[in-house]
Amino acid sequence: MGELKQIRICGFGGQGVILAGTILGYAAINDGKWVSGSNAYGAQARGGSARSEVVISKEPIKFPHVIESDILIALSQSAYDEYIKNVAEEDTLVIYDDLMVNPHNLRGAKQIGVPATNTAIHELNRKQVANIIILGASVAITGIVSKQALVSSITENVEERFRELNLKALEIGYNLGEEIK
Image 1 (spheres, rainbow, N blue to C red):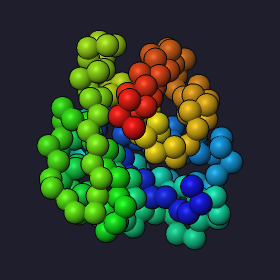
Image 2 (image 1 turned 90 degrees about the horizontal axis):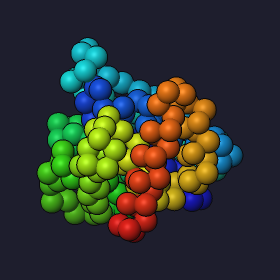
Image 3 (image 1 turned 45 degrees about the vertical axis):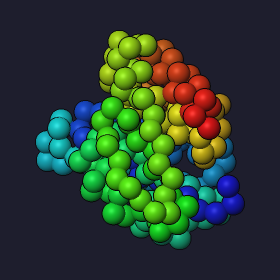
Image 4 (image 1 turned 180 degrees about the vertical axis):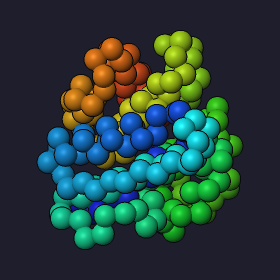
């Protein structure tokens, strides 16, 4: 990855969108990359819109916000519908939760469905870790950060009582991404 990558993770409040962005950003730092990030969420703590934006580069970052996503990770239909308008014209990768999002036909974008929520429910009995499953799959598909950096980031940024569950979710998601890739 020689050039700047603009990643937007989006969904609704309560899906762990902000945590996923934080984990991705710290993983990139662990890999020795330059990182900028920002988060936004609606007035409601749960159910409102949420997004996390991460800019990753091997060089210093000149503008710290996502202008057009190179990679869009969508966890809900409303977020997908809102942010699909702001993807780069060409070579965009859209990774979406296939239970929560019905994608549009797009030219110039590759769209990949990941069974994140379904897998979280059926394999871990906790839909709350769908964010980590889709993040793990996204990293396996894109190689944007290393798996080890992601593991370290979860260890550093997730409360101890949730750490083991999130590490399991990461492993499951990463394996899903490897199968999809």
